[in-house]
Length: 165
Ligand SMILES: [Zn+2]
Image 1 (cartoon, protein in one colour):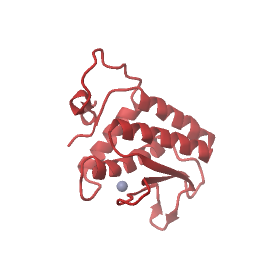
Image 2 (tube, helix red, strand yellow):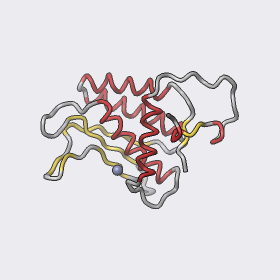
Image 3 (cartoon, helix red, strand yellow):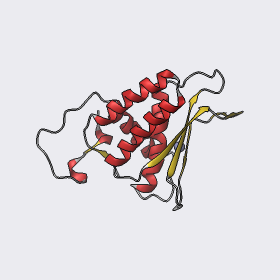
């Protein structure tokens, strides 16, 4: 049940764009960059597109801060939605880039559980975190040259990201 992602330079490039946007502290730029990276990931993974909303300060209660939230549309007219927040609750600082990116990919993994793997529920299993980590590695990888020879499209043409070093 590996999540497969073709080798590419698109996601790393968009991740760098997100890092720059987040660094400005500008919510709109961060939202656009976040949408770009998840759009590319959903296209590559052949999952329906998501709507990304980037909020300001993380909601917090006595138990901690909420990093992100995935809300499936459950067949409704709207897209499945990912919410992430870009400022920490306590110190009101911009969330660290890798933390923010991991949250985005974490919510994407919930989406993939339902849409790609056709699971009835999306739990934080060991497999879930493996998928999250392998996506993280793929997105943070240095630019990868396209394969030397072209191969037919389809799942077989992709390398399983879960086995990436
Ligand atoms: Zn989760």
